[in-house]
Length: 300
Image 1 (tube, rainbow, N blue to C red):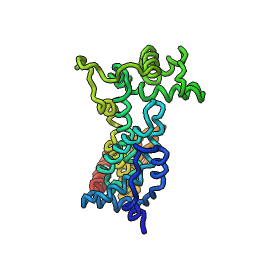
Image 2: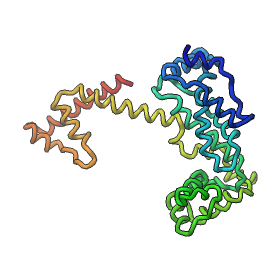
Image 3: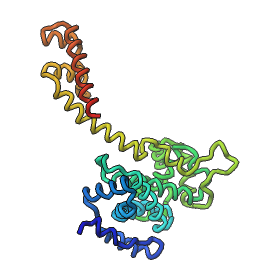
Image 4: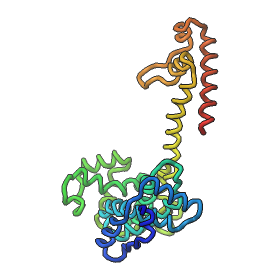
């Protein structure tokens, strides 16, 4: 019997009961092989098979638990962080494309973190704590940076104050003013004010999702698109170069594909090397580039 079939009858653990029991139950769920994962994802995508989606979600519950554990320092219940992370996992399963060549665990990670971030921002009671991109970055990095600076087991629990030089260092690294670091540190240690911008501050209002969308490059679909583009570029470029004759390939590489510490060759330099005119080198280069474009286009 495959893991996928086993998952079909596996009881769904509940994070609302004992968190220890939930974690133990989630860790008992069998992990999927790559082929099982692809098969289930195709069933859900093509046939809207909810049992297949359920199996994909359950096999990745342990991932949510691990991610949620990293946000315990914000003083929110572990069970609630897990529940929000599970929502992100379900969103990832809904959008997952098995033909992309990426495992679900990598794809889901971004969605899980996004939902947990949103939950934290909704529940932390800080006034205007995230009205700028830099302040949002400060909010999610200050605690870990303090722990790294202090290197003290009590630093996270006690949230000890930073010294003047440490404040300047954090401010410089995150691109904010030193006084903003001090203010954020005070708010995070006190937790006594409201997170959401005041309703009358319409110009500064941000929905929680806007906090997460500040760095568009981190959006999962954008990252997958970039990885796919890089993969096609690397393998496609090798195939395109291989389609050229030796002289054409050498000319293209000398003109366009030199290392960072090298200089590109000029038409006149190559003309002298090959004993032809600069115009002839230009013609060879243009013909080679046209052929390479054809090879790359055929791969898209």
